[in-house]
Length: 250
Image (cartoon, rainbow, N blue to C red; front, side, top):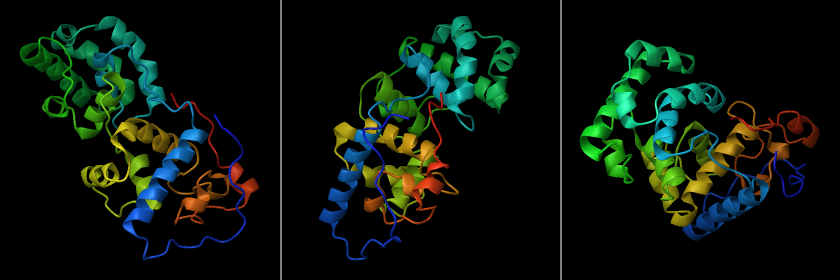
């Protein structure tokens, strides 16, 4: 795991964030967490393999209910066989289903990808559009997928609220919302727009490696002193260190 120093040493029980935290204090704390995670994960990036917007769009659709690692094992053969939107639109359904089967829900995913190819050809001359409204109008594409593509293929800032991002946003006390769209809107008001894409990568990396769902490695967390949820997992550095998962996850 990339690090710019050792995690904060934490031995004391957690102290809850004051209930009267002002809006200004919340914004400052959120931005400091972002800066410190940037220092801790200097190499954070999208862990799906792709070389163009179409490949990233298809890979992100396949990543639903599936790990990036498994998607990356499937896409080399897929991208060799299907190179354009026209190829997906004209795909043999059985062949396509066989190729994407390891990612799960393969019939629905193959159906969406074929429809995606058709819509791209019919509406966008075979090219992946570069706006949120156009992307979410495509089969199988929601806001999360659209923001992944915008941020990583078009350099348009976007917040990707997956399960890791949502969990960490709540643990950090940034929001109590559970709806991904509402989480996105709240966080967008805390963090500068230029940082949205990289913030998404940092929180996803942190959620995969340290701030786990069931047992976060609190004693190994670089932002423990800024987190009101500190203590949900082991605070002892040795115990917490054993919970840290090493990347990459691709």
